[in-house]
Length: 116
Image (cartoon, rainbow, N blue to C red; front, side, top):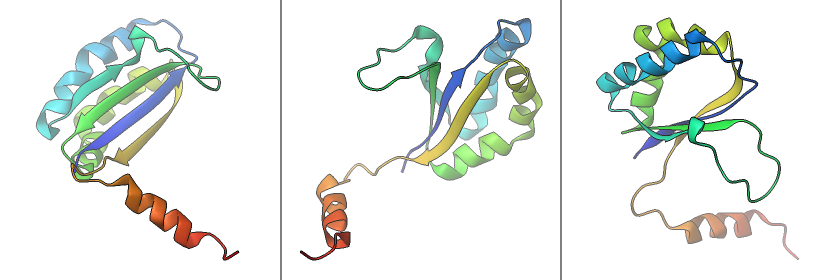
């Protein structure tokens, strides 16, 4: 099942270290099968709510690979290049299987509702 690293990055201060981080990060994905799916410098269109910052989404074959990438010495070496100049929220999340049926989630919600 795929997994994703999703970041909402904001309050970026332009700095040469951020450019270096962006140049170096793809090499850290390679051993773990990761790749950019969304790279927020391209902007986004807000449809509801108030979204500040840029979205970054990185796909991995599974959550184990996503965790291993995050904890890897190669990524941890470059992470301060970003974190010194950019605030943000970052999560690792499982994707859904190809055969995912949202109706099963709806059933679980209905089962958890108090009886009327």
